Image (tube, rainbow, N blue to C red; front, side, top):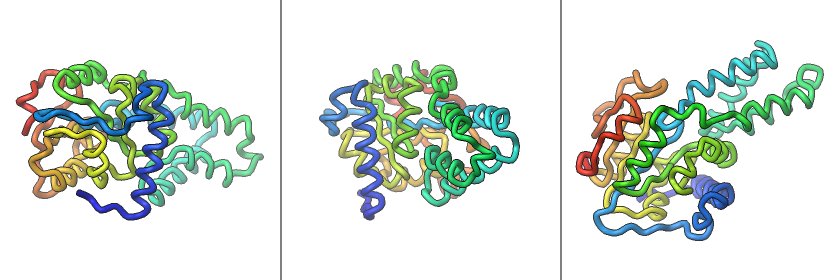
Length: 261
């Protein structure tokens, strides 16, 4: 459905390789069988992670407080500036790259190796499972009774994989995880990996839902979860989600017929 350029194809390949490597110990077949065919009448749920299943705004707040306590205001401000620079350049959040640049651009007199390694551990050893939204895992279990649950997330392959694993979300969806730079540009990959008669996309970002609906049409039900910093934003012009819920846990009360658009 979507024609990918060379950069997109490379990103997709890297994401798939990272998924196969990172998730193989949780779901061995995911490394060997990337395609899973579903029968007619089947349903597949495509679930976002940040601010949909996981309270990423709260996580960033925790990181900011920890950085201030460890580095002080000046270096903390510098880190978030680098974070945004990398995000603009790569069109995706890339924590490892932001950390690497912080070390490269900061004299050792201001950031010694021991302190840098501690700062890195604040990100890589963060207890992500503590920031799951209430009812997130139970909602995934409920949706699994109606169809296949698949995490489809944006982010760098390394850190986002770690986040999904350590939050227990990878285990909750039996290792079905796809990572892309812009997931709405990869529906051909998604459909090829997990073929279904109908898809339900669950996301906190209305623009992504809008673009996805334009691509998939009636094949896709869009569910806008009003959590995180996009909750109060205006909807894209001409777009109305098929379903809007205030909390991810609200989806546990819906039945299959209500999710078919």
